[in-house]
Amino acid sequence: MRKKLLLLLLLPLLLLGTLLIAAYLLTPTLSRIALEHWIKSQGFESAEVSLQHPQAGHVEISQITLTRTDGQRRIRLQANDIHLRFSLRALLTEAALESIHIQRLSADILIDTTLPQRIKTLQASVVDLDPVLATKLFDLLPAETAQIAELAMSYQTDEGPLFEGLGELTLNAQQMQVHLSLQRDQQILGDVLATLSRDLSIHLQLQEQTLLYEVTGNFAFSDDFWHLNLGHQLQAGALLDWLTRHQIRLPLAMQLPADDQLAFSSRLRLPRLLPLSPIALLQVMEGDLTLSAQLHPSFELALAKQISLEIDARIELQQNTFSVTLIEGSRVTLHQFSMGDISANRLLLQLVGNTTLRGALNHADSWQYEAAHWVVNGDDLQHQALEHFNFLPLQLQLQGGQFGQALRGDLSLPLVTIQPAAFALPTAYFQGQFSLPADFSEIHLTGSLGSEQLPILINTRAKLNTHLRGEVNWTLADTPAPALINALRPFIAAIPSPSR
Image 1 (cartoon, rainbow, N blue to C red):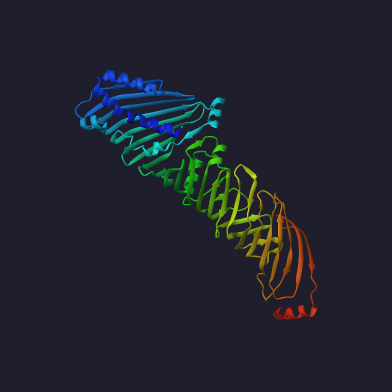
Image 2 (cartoon, rainbow, N blue to C red):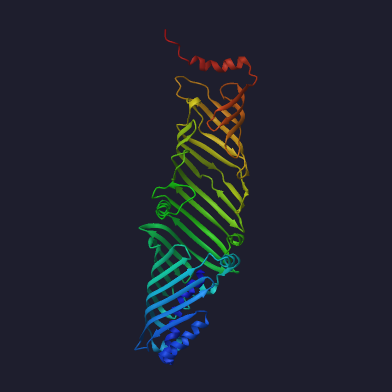
């Protein structure tokens, strides 16, 4: 579709060189009849050409109108007030013009998507990304420069919104530049600025008052595949605000500060014959993406008032299978954390080592995740029954498993202290295992509570709800009394004597 649309937009430019030569060789009437016949032979139902005989070095063409119906797609192109400048010698020997200026070019596309045959056609068909179009685009230009001062495009399905683009286009032997102001049902969406160079490098910006999205890179064709190498920069906060204002809903309601950013680079490998069916497209698409994000979303959730994400990740896609690798050092911070009786001013989770999730894109039950080591730290972690205990930092060693199933792993609390304390107290540690069912309704703990300063070991089994309330069984391992008394003496001696 995009390929056909680009060809249709360039068609008036390609016709103008032929048109002018014909006007020299024939009378305007005969050249118009010949051209209209040729245009109709290319699949257009109607063609209207209005031209005058060339004058000294230039010619004025008042209008070219083309219409075409392709299945359920109807296309109408109209170019008005065309001014051509030329050298007669170059025109007759090289079929080349000096410049083409089109005051206005409109392209209107109407599509009926409700008919079953239209849907079946889309699902069964492919689009041919012919490399000749990209590599020979600038050679097809019949002039040194071409300009469309007013470019007006419209696209509408049978009952869908009307999308319009209003702007300008300039083209020379080295690059093409397009500037379009986009609208949906006459509501301004923003501006698109795009530059395509002869070496197949590309630069594109989407903005509305401020920059929303920017992409730079290049693409090349080899071995029947297109190779795209692109760098992306999203102003995530501004883009989220833009989506909200234009009533584009996200799966999860959230807010972002205006200066939050998301940067990533991507490498894609696409076949020349690109399927239009999403399922078939996933079977042939390959590539990888490297992502770096610093986001601070505010969710409408009771878990935390705000979440800060500092994520480095690598995403790979190959024939319907994917892998997402979180890079060591990625961090998630929960601000004003609250879950039942547990609360914290700040809770920080930091990844130690890399971890990967992989599987088939359209089969979530096949997704598998690798083991992951997280260090949890924070400020003012509190629980009603354990308000004087400090458990942070703690370490979670999550076992690998299947996405959506129970979570299992090791839990380590290397230093448990009582605060505040008026005198020295022994510290403790906990080492054990945990498991959570898929619905996260309860926590199962087994392990040992001990102390580096006391010769005691307490075996623990617990079944707790998400409020950390439930059943706890303690079993004290055999402990020699003399050794325990000796270890306790320094702490007993530090206890202040009661005042008399």
